[in-house]
Figure (cartoon, rainbow, N blue to C red):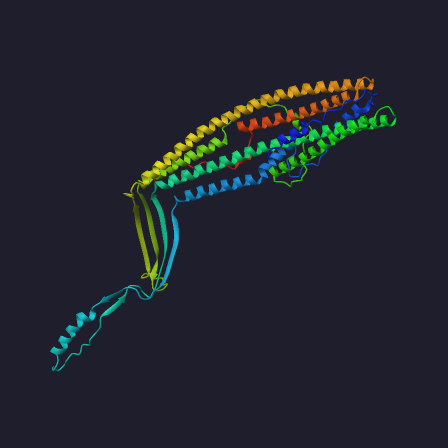
Length: 506
C-alpha cells in the first residue's frame, strides 16, 4: 500500500479559480494573526497527542515504531519461525554423526506355515522289524514299536525377540555434505529474514513520514480555513451594510467550502495512514500514533558506504547449498561403513538367563557399483543448478546497484526540491504580507487577496510534500545501502557450522 501519491494529490489539489470581484474596503488586520495562531495550535495539538504505550522505548517516536514493528510484525515473526525450522534441520543433520540407540521388540503368535518333515520312522522302523523277526521264538524276543515320522513347524507358536541396537557411522561422507546443505539453508533463511526486516524498516519510515505529511497538511488547511471563515464573516458584514454585493459573500463561502472539502479528504487520509502504520506495528488499527511536530525537519545524514545486501547473502547461501548438493551426489560414488551391534533375549517367553541371551556385532559396508547413470545425472543436475544461481546472483547484484544509485539520485533531487520549496514559501509568505497591507489600505481586491492567500497555502503544502519526499528518499537510500542497524536480528543468528572435510568420517 502506498499512501504518498494519494496524500500528495489531496494536498496539491487546487480550488476552483476565483471569479472576478470588485475592490472593497480592507479586511480586518487580524487575519494574519489568526492564521499564525491556527498554525501554532495545530502544532501544539500534534505534540499533545496521546503518548505511546508504556512498553515503547522513550525518545524518538519513529524509533519506537520501528522497534515495535521488528518485535511484533506478524510477517516478520513468520520469518523467525522459518529460521527456527532451518536451525532445527541443521541440528537434525548434525545428529546423524552420533551413534543411535534403539529398542526393538517383537512378540509373534504363529499358526501354519512351512513344515519340515524328518523321516525318523522310515529310517528306524525297518530295523525294528528285522530285530523283532530275528528274536522271535527266542527266550527273550524283542518288541520294538513302530514309530512315525516327525513333522517340525518352521514357525514356533510363540516367539519373542527383544534387543537393544546400536548403530554408528564409521565412514559416511554424505553426512558431512548434508550438514553443509542444512547450514547453507540456515544462512539463507537468516538472510531472508534480514531482507524482510530491512524492507519493514523502510516501510515503517515511509508510513510514518506520510502520516506526518498528512497531519502537517491538516494543520495548514485548518489555518487557511480560519482565514477564510473570517473572510466570509467580513464579506457578509459588508453585504449587510450595503457596501458590497451578494456575490462577494458567495465567493467567500465557496472558498471556505473548498477548504472544508480538502480538510475532510485529508482527515480520511490521516486515518488510513495511521491504520497502515499500526498494521506494520501489529497494533490496533485506531491506536493513536505519536508524530513529532518536526518529524519532517530531520537533517540529511552524511553519505555512508553501502553494506552487502542480505539478498546477495541469501543467494550466496543458495549457491552453497547447491554446491553441497553436488558434493552429496558425488559422494554417492563412495562406499559407506557403519557398525551395528545388538544385545537382547530370544525365546518362546520372556526369560532372563544365559540360554535366552543373544548378542551380535556387525560391520556393514554398502557400495553402489552400478545404477544406470542415476548418480551421474544427479551430479550434473546439481552443477547446473549452482551455475543458474550464480548467474541469477550476478543479475540481482547489478539490479541492486542500479537501485542504490537511483536512490542516491532521488535524495539529491529531493534535497534540491526542498531548497526550492523553502524559497517558494518565503516568496509566497512575503507576497501574502504585502497583500495584507494593500488590502488594509483598500488597494487590493478580494480576488487578489484570495489568490495571495491560496498561493501561500499551496507553498506551505508544497514544502511539506518536498520534505516528506526527502525523508522517504533517505529511508530508501538507507534500505538500498543496508545501513540500518539490526542488532537484535544479528544477535539471534546461529553460528556457522564447523567445516567437515568431504569424504572423511564424521
